Image (cartoon, helix red, strand yellow):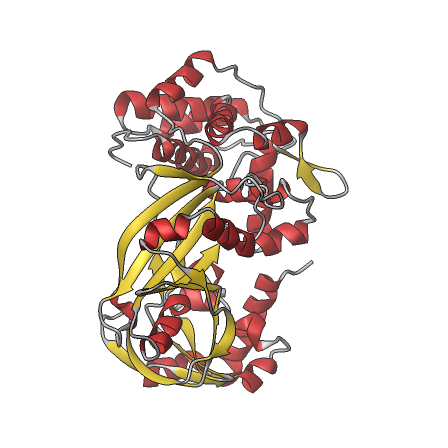
Length: 431
């Protein structure tokens, strides 16, 4: 079955052809499209214009370095805008433990399933007050109009484009107000490589004219049970791209945080038991291991159909299958009527953060190509992809070409980089 991403791709392709959008952008620098025009594709505008990360953009946008912005209620502009801010979860930043009050019985700190619950847990446990430096209370949230304002945004050629906003719509996940500070907070319960600046900038711009308090825009990425707060400022209130990262704060709920050390990885390597490759499950082709972790977290709260997983990951069905197969390859996921955690998967999800992470590492390194790649990196600070490809070729009969094995090395090296990244202060070079 087609998912919403596939449908969006098809719908946007038809609109670009119908209105010759690429020519208009090349000639005039942008294209203005109305909600009524978007509806001609057979899709609702709200489903066709919400791209929280650049990874969610339709293919025709990605292929032509395009982005879309709302400027009026029911009107959008498409152009070569620098619309996204990259996110880097830095595992060398200390993680502090915060606790929920004993009387809170309705939040399971190991199984927080929504952005709203993440925000409530962050507020109740005192994370926000720790970041902000004063007591705060929740105030505005939800959808609201923007009023009128202007700003400049960078284009991909480094020129700027003037944007005029006239009562567009924006949505605020949460905000918190103290004596001297006002916090605008956007929350995501999964890993993202970047986010759309508009989610913080439009509320910042509106409330800059409505309060004399210091405005603090914050992006919360809750991933693998760690609350990662990215604290920003806008250096120029009229410049969309003047967003500046001021601080990163990281927290865990209700358990001590113990970092992964290189000695932990070495212990695993010294005691690992290699598994036989199950050739009924494809060799992994899922390079972003953080997405595998997000999938395990979601399956810990509910069984899911393929469509459920596709919509959760916001990938097309082909990419979704890669990540499902990766979780199956490691022994964490199986298919009954729906996809569900195996007993092994359920067991690791009940562990504390460090034990769970190390058990996941153990599962990865129990496969010989991954063990070989880790050994290369620890001994030589580099990968020998020819050797890794040879190892894949030797243990997987269905991969009958060395050229195919070489392509699969990208996932092997990506997963090893993930292990090295979570290993505190490992001096990684040549990656």
